[in-house]
Image (tube, rainbow, N blue to C red; front, top):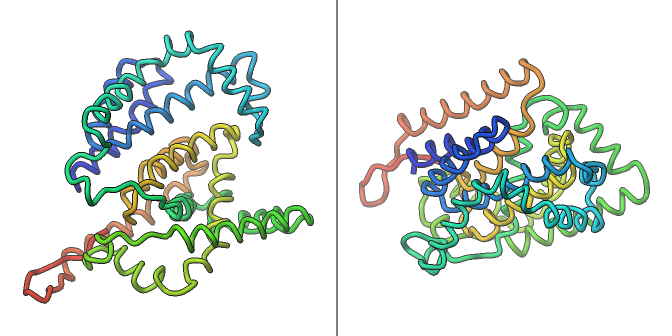
Length: 317
């Protein structure tokens, strides 16, 4: 997993990076390699195609409507109409990105499942709390500027948005109730999570998330994190943010296992499209990542422990 994860995270952003230079064949080829490393990358190739098509349409006669910061049924209908009317041109320009997706769909039809290997331990689930975890991780790794979870300006802006009017207060209360319900009903503990005490997620679940009403009490944190994700991508239209969330739903919600590597692609895609605005924030964020990696590596190397049978085990993500 270590080597495939590193290579996957290196290859997956390449199709997106190749599009501005119109290296569409290179984008499709690297997309094929990315899908070989992780099946769900087919969804992120569709995300790349969808956001590239949206960017193209925003530069055309559809731009005024499709560039809005909010999303409404009318905007969604306009987007679908534009995709249909411009489909021939968009497929000619961007269609090679979809080649790996079509090949992968053929594999799924032949295999009978997206899973390669043991199907019994990789059943599809309704793990909606994955979206809460994703929002928290994305916000926590979003630097130190506006849109970052640790920024005072973000906290003040969030409070102003939530308590600025009666309508916003009612919306906040409804969001809290819905989030708490989802966390209560759709927080899953896969047998692998409960059986392996080498992983940090084992202790996060055992000592925190499994306690009565603890995970529901985190609803305000997740709502704030989601708001930070929205602000972080404020340079993009509401449709772009919606496409990102749809891709996240398709890749995360069916996965019953609580494991950080499942979130990394969504987090990287969000950060690639919303880079740091200052060198200070970039250096501070990189230093924080480096510190976490050093501590994790140090614990792995210097703090082993023994299982009841005498085997040496090591802590890891």
